[in-house]
Image 1 (cartoon, rainbow, N blue to C red):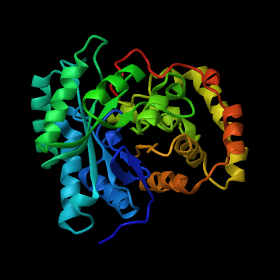
Image 2: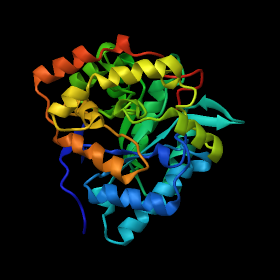
Image 3: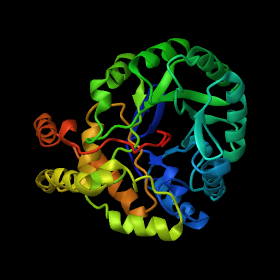
Length: 343
């Protein structure tokens, strides 16, 4: 059986590979979808490199397309003896409801019953290792009832661990008191440092909850390799949505300023003999020993590059220097264009 030697980290009581793979871009929101064969090659390369954590969601593509494709590929790899179900930690999410092209949210117990059964069927699994509330719809949503339902699903064996995506620090404490959380999944990168200032990372540390940063490379911006003209042409020719087209950080002068900001990291990357992407991921992993980034990619070479970040160790002096070079107030443009924060 193949399998790389990748260090493990904890998400609460769940042991996972030190880095996971964000699977959204395989089917949705990041340009042309991968074919089943190319997805198989990507996931196989990830498993053989030691990745055990795979992040999906029921809204990543119409009718659970992402879950279905991931489930099909993982079953093939298990049948071929490349990995086993016990070695994998499969993540999915519920709460985002798309109707007539519009995003909505539902965390009611009645909806959760339907969502979990649909995700299990899509993935072809008996249980999901880590099940996230994808978004908490509004401040007066009954989060307590949602958490009680998820606790009941744990007892029934349909899910093993529970997480929240994009909660406030207060919501984390409220939810954790009812059903222990294994992880929180918020956007977090050198360009989006909100978890360091809004109390979210602090409360995770306090309660021993893991943290899975999504968009840890700011949708590729921190790699220094994004070519917006090429992305726009590809999205137009393929007729596929790429969320970066129209996001302010990737537009015009904003993009120019942000690219120049990333360039300030090049001397440090050269000193550490690593790429910009590896430096940005290593900075994240140094923030907390339960930080497990889930960079997404559709390319095997980018997957392998990202994993190299696990070998980049940063001293306190180097971390301080990176913080001096890039601070959130220097980033040009907001996180999102005027569209729902469902990705």
